[in-house]
Image (cartoon, rainbow, N blue to C red; front, top):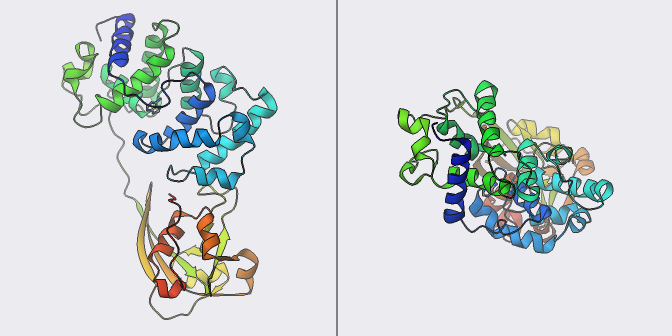
Length: 359
Ligand code: ADE
């Protein structure tokens, strides 16, 4: 890296102001709207967030409105964005902001970090974009851009490589003029999303090409180093479908579950058909599954089999009969949405009407 931090910062800002995408959260300094955008953008692509963002803010236009929201309605508004825990955390944080901060987001990285669901990245993004605090926000895009700028060959997700990249980010941010810290945060992300991409980066259009150590070393394609991917676990799930007329038997996932808390699902168990008995259902020991499908999450691939079942005494305590029409209004787990869509209409009595898009 040859140019000074000041030169690098000003080249990046000049490029950003000319080349940035016109995204709906970029025209505001409202901390609430910026916070919502950053939470939505965690683990979700920009193209999936854009169509949901304005609708969500119309429904919940302020911290107060979000704090007062019914959690099931909130989860429904989150449909299609995935990782529903974020919506619950947003609601928990909004209540804290109303209770402890008079409805205004706290104005520093340190105070933002104390709120539920706000980690180092989100606190830095909100503090720099909304409050012009000089705290660099390092998401995957920013880490990749900076790793290449410095030709940092160590992994940057943790450890010494990450510390080196953070130091570089801080020295660049320190050279950014007041009033432009938010643009710098967004510019780093933008560079990583549009030019300095993981594969086929467009170095010829990059405002940092003259200073990029990875480009001059010929290592752009291999920096940052990627951690070896572990093979996904392959697991089996059995779900039981009990039907009575237009009703199906569902249960609600616990509120403290790490996966889709509070969502509704068919009673199900890890393992084979015999393991379904632990849900309290009575399952015939012969007969083919009504449906079989794959469901992949971050590090596991499930083969899901759905069996016709009857309620047993203990399933009555844990589960509820719900009409198909009412089920359509509930937040359903992804596996259950897939299962109901794949079960033959004859078994269900009537096909479940096209429900909400859950993931
Ligand atoms: N990803 C995370 N934050 C972002 C932002 N502000 N703009 C575009 N993509 C992002």
